[in-house]
Image (cartoon, rainbow, N blue to C red; front, side, top):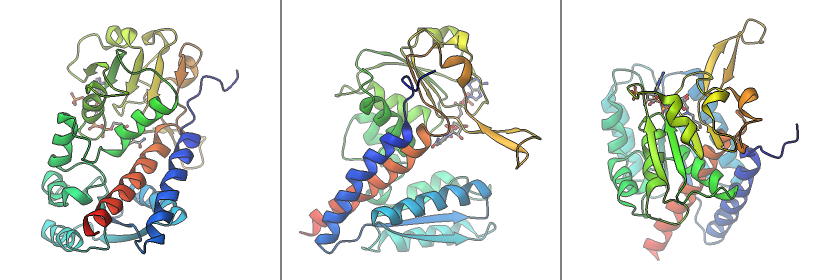
Amino acid sequence: MSDSNLIDGRAIAAEVHESTGARVAALRERGVVPGLVFIRVGEDPASQVYVGMKERMSAKLGIQSTTHVLAGDAPEAELLALIEKLNADAAVHGILVQAPLPRHIDGARVYSAVAPGKDVDGFHPVNMGKLVLGDPSGFVPCTPAGVHELLVRSGVPVAGAEVVVLGRGNIVGKPLAALLMQKAPHADATVTVCHSRSRDIAAHCRRADILVAAMGVAEFVKADMVKKGAVVIDVGVNRVDDPAAPKGYRLVGDIDFAAIRPVAGRITPNPGGVGPMTIAMLLQNTVRSAEAATAARA
Ligand SMILES: NC(=O)c1ccc[n+]([C@@H]2O[C@H](COP(=O)([O-])OP(=O)(O)OC[C@H]3O[C@@H](n4cnc5c(N)ncnc54)[C@H](OP(=O)(O)O)[C@@H]3O)[C@@H](O)[C@H]2O)c1
């Protein structure tokens, strides 16, 4: 089969990085180096990988990144004190506290402690509120922003489309629904959000012009749940045991990609779809923050 119906997240992320890189260069010419700080708590292997990828891409684009690693049993107060220090540091334009946090730490309190203007992950209640209200001055969480950007740059019509989002998590499903339902260019969709209490999810899915799976359930969406020609976006990242794989497991998405691809009009590969876009939107948010701070000082 040709690659014609694939939405290539790596290529689209590269386009976003190119424009972000140019904005970094313009800031540097004015003596401003965009600064992004990552905070990890504990040694979660997936978090190490994710932060490592973000560090490498930051360096490539000329963004100065720094990573603070706190012990897995570090008290919440230590994390909050670090955030307070970074909030006050003019060289820091973005602060990202990598999830998951250990159980003894209250994530909501931590995300609320990041200054909204440096909350490039978009999780602060002020930024979530702005998203819901349609105020573009806030930061949109990176994965939903990346899904939206994929749709727009792939020329998928969103206005008036029936969008079904599987999952109402605070990081993906909920903010994505808010983004796509806005009365705004490249939005104006009719959005249905399904979750673990939804009845007949398959029937909802079959109505979708655009189906976004963000549940964290391996290959939940089957081919008979997809309308012919629908656009299918797979956000899920799930570990499934595979004794034949070098690490004993492999990563799969929330959709049965091989079976759905012939039915779908457009479809994201996974990996290589949403993942690269999440990083691209993070770095774009960081540069926006640096530009705003520079404009405010001028
Ligand atoms: N590619 C990326 O860059 C990226 C970034 C972030 C997340 N992800 C992935 O996206 C997925 C979702 O992440 P998240 O943080 O949004 O997860 P989450 O907060 O745990 O939310 C999962 C949602 O899926 C729903 N759900 C779970 N099982 C279900 C089932 N069997 N039937 C119907 N609904 C079900 C849950 O329903 P309830 O609300 O009723 O519990 C919940 O709303 C994960 O696989 C995660 O790894 C990928």
